[in-house]
Length: 266
Image (tube, rainbow, N blue to C red; front, side):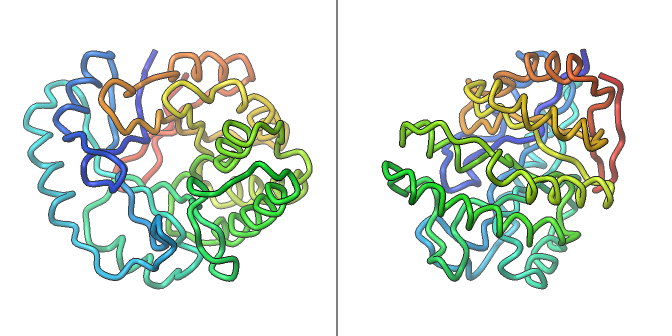
């Protein structure tokens, strides 16, 4: 099994304190073939303010240092670009600041019109409110997927992590299936990938209906990632993810280098 982790965060993300060298050690211990560091670059920040300055120096320096101890592990430089749909031109300028191998496109916040608050900080106990948040989220994803600035669409079911996990609901993407189909078709037509994000191994089975629909529509390119923010969570759930992909008829795992896709057989 060619096992990789294409979504990880280090101390260069605002929500992690882990040095990339520790993530590399964990990846090697887990038997990974490739690790991509994808720290956060969010145009909409956690507190709903808009990102002002951005310095690539700590990200690139940490990456270059970690490569020295990577051994046979292929370490790639990526980024998780959040909220690109809020300022597409600035997103492209920011991405030009580093020699990136891979870019995840994600939405972590409400739209600008709805206040930009990060879903993590929201109270989802009211189901009607949770559904309105999903309306806003899907609208943002429809805008994001039109842009060429990313390679894989990050954690499509992201808000459900909090809506169901903390709010106690049982929502799925089904009420928004027409829009989700549009998102998937747009990805496929542009030759980009859908991410299967295991959330530290805690979020594997909820992906099955998403993957089934993606396959029905003809989707083939999938990236996998743990979304680990700590070394102990690197690669969590990824072996199970690969087995699910095989069971659902997928043949390829999408790998990237210098922003070019290189599929490998599952």
